[in-house]
Image (cartoon, rainbow, N blue to C red; front, side, top):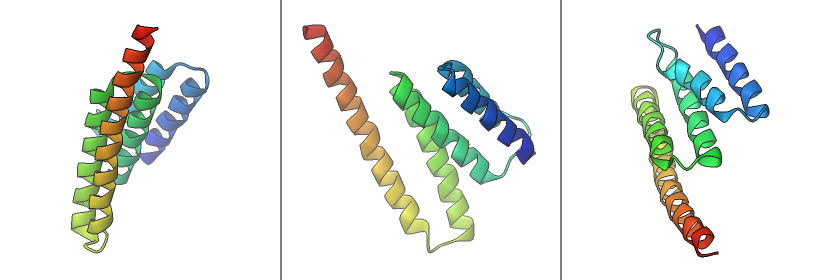
Length: 118
């Protein structure tokens, strides 16, 4: 099934290069919403890519944040099951993502206020 995921990643990249961000996100969300289970790392990679696209190309911070939270929780489960040593890095990653999401929200609000005042 990983070939399906790679195909959808490629299709998402194709749409992203053409500027069709909505289609790219839909391709990636098809992986996450599939009834067939993929390896957990595939879901983590996909959700991180969705969050990146949403943060760069839309104002939908909450949707991006939910994908980040789901990817981090999946990553934490994966780490907790297999590698106790890397748990520290997973928590540090959560910390960085949390502050990145807050900084993006503040930046978005300030940018909107600046644009409205002009």
